[in-house]
Each structure stands twice: as structure tokens, then as C-alpha cells.
Length: 286
Ligand code: AMP
Image 1 (spheres, rainbow, N blue to C red):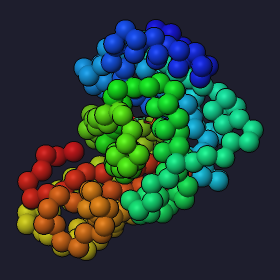
Image 2 (image 1 turned 30 degrees about the horizontal axis):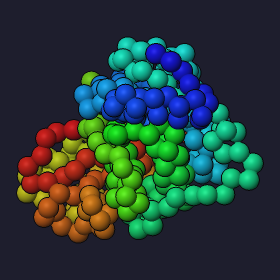
Image 3 (image 1 turned 180 degrees about the horizontal axis):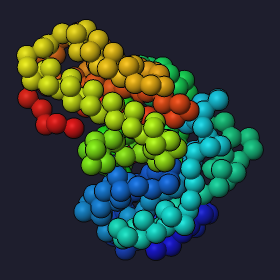
Image 4 (image 1 turned 180 degrees about the vertical axis):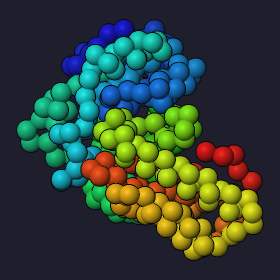
């Protein structure tokens, strides 16, 4: 496994692979890998001959006052985990090369970025779509894998690829959870043991919502009331949002008739966690 820092070197490697007719798979990450990321690499491997994982804590997707500086970083750890699942190249560029002085170009998806994380982290998705576009131009992948944990991000990237006719296939991977149900996240390592315990309310409340729907409840208000009060009851839990939205249009859902995305972002102490599930009349448990 090679670690490439330079944009030109990565582009030359991608060109060489393409000349050899190798299919390139890309998994973009912020690094500090966990077993959930590894599942995405394995999924990429099934659809590609070579797998590139990018490790880049992208400053433009962090909003003023967020944890950009505090975000955990450990390239040796990432290299070890990448190696375990047969990643061919880690692309780990420097901020100064990705955004040199004078940088002024951005890619923006307009409508589905408005609610949820878009509303609570203004500018976040513009940072995501901009860096993903750059990564596509640098790594030149045939396929790229994104996790359903960042459900809105996945939809936004899919929208961008369709709208801008980008020649890359977007694949998704279901949420990977710890055995107690907490969605894996690099930010989980920032939780104190007590906060980690409280965080279980997130997944539990999603399961409760699924049970309500399975029991015949269809009113979004009733489901949201229950989930919000359950999560807010946790010590030190501050809800950014808990909402029911159409998983494609991201319009608000008033009644569960088709699939409905139940998405939430919750702050526990200084750490912000997100989770979601798609509710429908008959669903698998998260
Ligand atoms: P991140 O490093 O948090 O930006 O995540 C990189 C990619 O891994 C994104 O596509 C995430 O959606 C995905 N991902 C992170 N955690 C999980 C998880 N627990 N299950 C599935 N995908 C995940």
C-alpha cells in the first residue's frame, strides 16, 4: 500500500491505472478509521480493481466554531486499517495544496442541502461537494462508495453527480453499528464513558420509532414527539434536529405512507453525532 500526498502524483497513478484498464474505486474519508470505514473499502474492492482511500480533514466542510482543529487524526492508524482490507493507495493531501492561496471555486447543490445538516451547518455541504469534486478530478474513480450514516450527504453527492454529468458511479453502504447499536463514528472516541452510555439513546429511539410504525402509528407528529422526548431526556443531550423527511426530495413528511427518513443530529457535551433510519410499514431493525 502506498501513501500519496501530491495531487500530481495521484493523478499520474490514476492515469496509469486507466491505461491498464483497471477500474478505480474511491472511498473518501476524514480519516481516523473504524470498522465501518473498512466495510466501505471492502465494498469498493468488490466493484473495482484498485481501491483508493482518501484521508483529508477538509476544512471547508467544517463550519466556524466546529471541531476542525480537534477532529482526531492518526495516519499510521489509518494506514494499518487500510492495509488490513487491501487498500492500494491512501491519498492524503495537505490543505495548502488542496486550497492554495487565491482559491475561489465551489460546487453547490441547492435544494436538498437546505434542511437537516444543511440548516444546522450552513456551508457544510458546499464544502463536501467541492472537495468530492476535487477528489473525483484527482483520483479519477469509476466508482465511489459513501455510507448511509451520512444519508443527506449521500443524496447530495448523487444529485451533484447526476446534475453535473460526472462519469462516476456512486455506491452506498448501510450504517455499520457497534454491538450495542451505536453507529460507528470517528467522533465516538471523543465521548467520555458516561456520554458514550447516553449516546445509546440515539439508536434506541430510532428502534422505538420503528416499533411505533410497525404497531400502526402513521402520524409524524406522534413519532417525532416520542423520539424527541426520549433523546432529550438523556443527561447532557442537546438535539440539533430530529425530523422526518422524504428520503429523495427531503420534503417534510406528515404521515408515514411510503419510506420516510428519520434523521437526527444530537450534541452530547462537545460531540455532535448523527444517525438515521428509513421508516416504512415493514422495516428491518437498525
Ligand atoms: P467520515 O470519515 O466520517 O467522513 O466518513 C467517511 C465515509 O464513511 C462517509 O461516506 C461516511 O458516511 C462513511 N461512514 C462513516 N461511519 C459509518 C458507519 N458507521 N457506517 C457506514 N458508513 C459510515
